[in-house]
Image 1 (tube, rainbow, N blue to C red):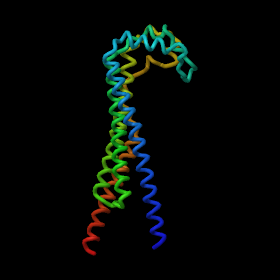
Image 2: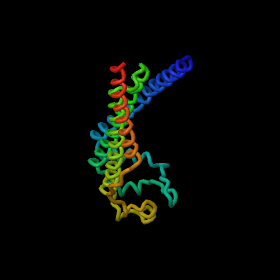
Image 3: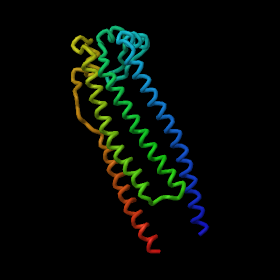
Image 4: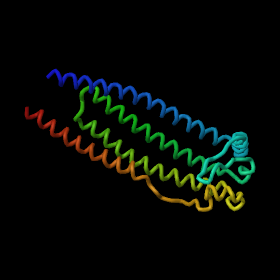
Amino acid sequence: MEEQIVVHKRFKTLATVMYVLSFIVMIIDGLVAAGVVIGGIVLAIMPVDEVMGILSNLTMDASLETPGGAVTITEEILSYVNLDKTMLMLLLLLSLLNVLIILFIIILVNRWLANLRKGNILTVQNSKYIEYIGYSFVAFALMEMLMSIAVSLLIKSSIAISELPADFREFFDIENIGITFDINLIPVFAGILIWMIAKSLKYGSYLQDEYDQTV
């Protein structure tokens, strides 16, 4: 009996620690979401020429590492770029949705941990939280795919590929950049597994209720 009490206290302590940590992560993710929103507003107001001017100032010592080596981003390279503001705004919107999905997952985990702290483990509410987390993982994978498509469209619409220096095209293989519908299956399978766990917990909560009513 004493051992069970010790285990229960340790479990409650762990749930409390994770509950507090989830709040910290929630705040950080919220700040990231706010940053994306502010960036989108600034980008929407700022003319394209000013955006390109800022990029030019940032590329004094900028370089990109590629399998072929380091490519220095110079004003000459940027001269081939005609930024597609609409596609960039779309990419920012998708990024915001991605961050909000993560925030939604953190909130659900926070609510679940809050119930665990109170000793409410096998409940229908907890199973719902976990079920929604599973759905969110699948949505996250789909959003990643959409962001990849948006990046490809942004590159194709913003860069005069045929006029780029040959070494730059070779390093980045820009000419072969295409729209692919590849989806990361890891979060999809994780989401399905979490959904199955949620259904198991829901069934377990029903069995617990029946047992309590019988007793």
